[in-house]
Image (cartoon, rainbow, N blue to C red; front, side, top):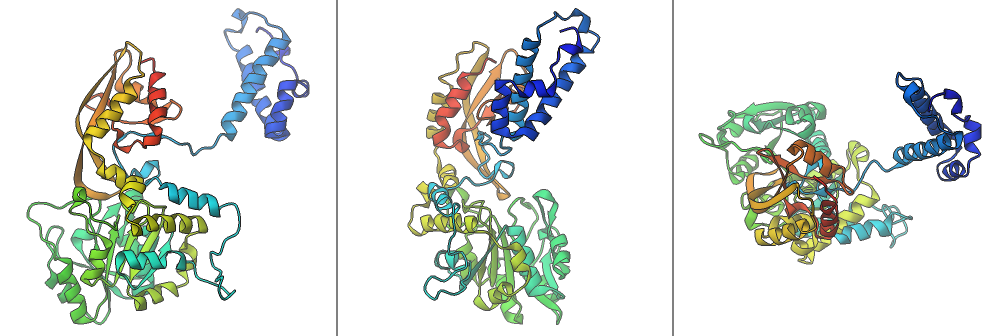
Amino acid sequence: MSKPRVIPSIEQLLQRDAVRALVTTYGRPATVKALREATDKLRTELAGPNSADRVSIKVSEVGRRLECDTGTLLECAFAPSLRPIINATGVIVHTNLGRAPLAVSAITAIAAIAPGFTNLEYDLNSGGRGRRDTHVDHWLRELTGAEAAIVVNNNAAATLLVLTALASGHEVIVSRGELVEIGGGFRIPDVLAQSGACLREVGTTNRTRATDYASAINNRTGLLLRVHPSNFRIEGFAERPSLESLVAVGQQFGVPVVEDLGSGHLMSHDELSTEPTVRSSIETGVDVVCFSGDKLLGGPQAGVIVGREPMLEKVRNHALLRALRADKLTYAALNATLREYALGRAADAIPVIRMIKARPDEIERRARAAVATITSSTIKMEIIDGVSTVGGGSAPGSELATRLLVLTSSTISAEGFAAALRRLAPPVIGRIEQGRVVLDLRTVLPEQDEALASALGGLTG
């Protein structure tokens, strides 16, 4: 290619059969835009310092290149930005990878509801307006022991809504050891300020007693807030009042107790013995509990509020609820997820629970099957003991014994190898430990095993 004049005009290119096909698929405006980008790039190349060394080619050959380049540009421009990936990080509730994968029943429920209309806020018996919460209220009350339930779009929204509805203009008493920050800069003091409540700190970072709460109560107190340490631990010289003693203080002074459980879950796990269930908090006497739907629960993104009916009625009637409410797809998925718990099938049906309970020997068996397809002589593998984590700001310090697949390449660095894995179809996301790429199949869905084996088999190292 030696002269810019070999580049056909846009109108000439639009007459080519391959470009006509692109117009049919992507539309004329997008195709013209991509053609201009492709021709500009080629024109720049031809005008570059090495243009004299290029071999002259025919206009038809230039046309074929521009067809190809334009098609690639359009394919990239219109490809979905959200892509399925293989999570081999060993972090079960990975906040950057979409948190909890949904149960098959939840996916089926979404597919059934998404295409058309539904009785989201319509009472089929009376023919009048209904309430969204009725689609999950029954199961949430059954599974938690609470009197009522409300669902919003995430747990941060749930916490903000509860504080706004119950304590705006009043003091909220919180231990200094619970003024936490979670992912994305979400800070409890900031949420309190946004809600219109006034923060009243008690105790110290490492030691707070029930008497500290009692001493701080006055006629401006709105509620006592308990924040579960979902993503951190304070160890050593530390003291924290039991939930029972905090509830006793609230009952003594007639002040409601609200608990932000964060990841909250509905069933006890031997593997996560330190994580309280929502039911245990309700049975202890907490007035309102907030927790996430897409973490340990294993459902869609949602913020769940359960507790005493008089408290939740105030929350339900607050104007902010409308801005934070969940949509029909969330309700469909959450309803299906809760039914799995009610039917006693959660351990088998919900991916997050399955991953938590997966045995190391089963993880190793799957890892060996996955690497059996690797034929490159430059890639070496070994399987070693390791740990998985729950993630998602859940169960800090809890580690699950696992078997890790370690991959090393004799030709590229660990960072380069990890990047190569991310370029696979589907992308494989692992982690780097001690300068080596590590894959933990605990977090790989069983139905992705074949895709993982195929992807690894295509590696050249």
